[in-house]
Length: 245
Image (cartoon, rainbow, N blue to C red; front, side, top):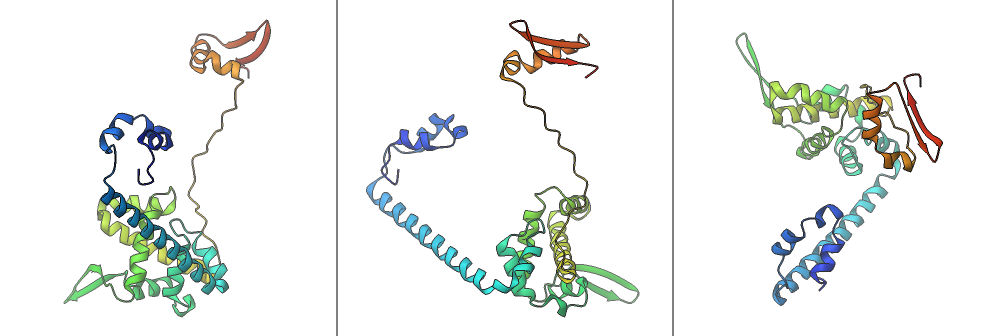
């Protein structure tokens, strides 16, 4: 509508799933946009385009500055949830990973370890210390939110913690775990391999069109009543399924 296209053309250009709600879309959208509103919308869209161009330019500069860090980028982006921007931020914030004796030292430096309180013979832990760079904590928490969406070791770790710790503490724990994983992989020059067993996906064979038109449900129904199902077309056998197959 901002480009002065008719409503019918806009609806036709929508994804097929959305086209079923034609009435709701028509009711929600005005028949025409007032001239002043149209000017404002066009201005905002130009701003968005300019910002997208600036983002692409900055990403290009980042890639140039990390030209000698291709292996580190490869290692970090192998971890679930970490893409180019996340990996670039971690490299910039951490610097030389070998400056940290172990993964716990790195997690402590990042302020992702719990604070410890001691009184007499009592020791208790509190919230994370939040020492060090707030940028690395921010990016790791954002990456943790992405990582738990994908099946695997990290998501499984999060799901084990959730009932006991709640969402926020579990996300912070995932962020801390991801940082420890990153330290180990960078120090040992390894990529992430998720060793969790996955359910095996069985790909069914593609049936001929004539079989598909007969109906899979009908075949299953017949097979439940017999030990063998044979389908013929013009006296020629085109499909056979039996217990001896």
